[in-house]
Length: 359
Image (tube, rainbow, N blue to C red; front, side, top):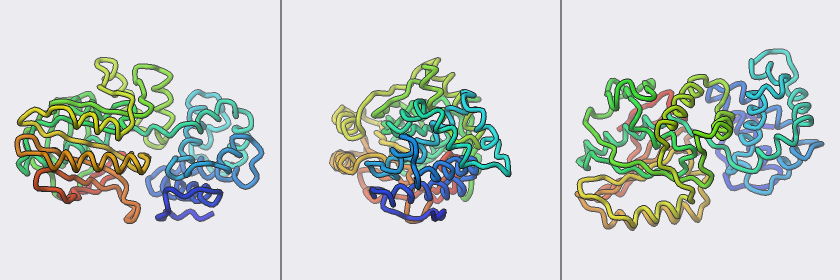
């Protein structure tokens, strides 16, 4: 099995696509400083050749598109949940990144003994909410304000998961020395900043509302634990941020509704927009999971609304998504009127560890 991260058809199906999805995920984890997660995914991949459990058979005979469905991360999330609950102590050496152990044998044994608990993890996509991505959203809003758009932003997010980025107005940001948000903030972000910095301008968040097809309630302990299982164990800072986000949600829940991306965007764009406010659609590491027909509907809705936008009621689209040709995550912004072409403002670590500003 190749272990080089490469561009592949995200919609591919079949046994070959399953193996490619696992190989790409292994390579991606290694390139993202996640060696433990890479080991878990690699051990899971060994189950594909001779599947002897229902869990392994479901993976090997996956009916959908395994890369688009994030199949390797669904399975890895289930194992991580067992580890976090101390239900499978034999996994501990792998999660401690110990050497000279048989990862494949350990994982095969755990799958055989805990199949009933693991099977439901294959039923839905991983929820990978990450507060660190909000630094990109804030930097993009600063750039939009410098371009002359009203610095009062009414934000709409698709793929919000638990709505952690819908609380971005409660966080503090140090963006290459540019300070934004309350001090000290529910969470403080100081990503490694490369290149120039965004403009230092006052901005206001007028509204934050998001959607998800399977929203997570951070105030529910079981749902919060499930979200933690999708955090890669190497990234300790993300667990600390998750705890802070849970505490913030207990103070005031984010405005999050159950809806598809297309239904949500179409409905929200039909609502009146206040003068002197920039309406923003934003999303991060979610577009690849949105079905193609919904991508088209969202794009059409935004472009039609953009055609009606005015200087007093502009529209912007902020996206932090994977460029699968260049193998980087890019912050791309479109705005209307007068800025229909996309502007690539930054390259960014998928969890917000660093930002390379191009804007």
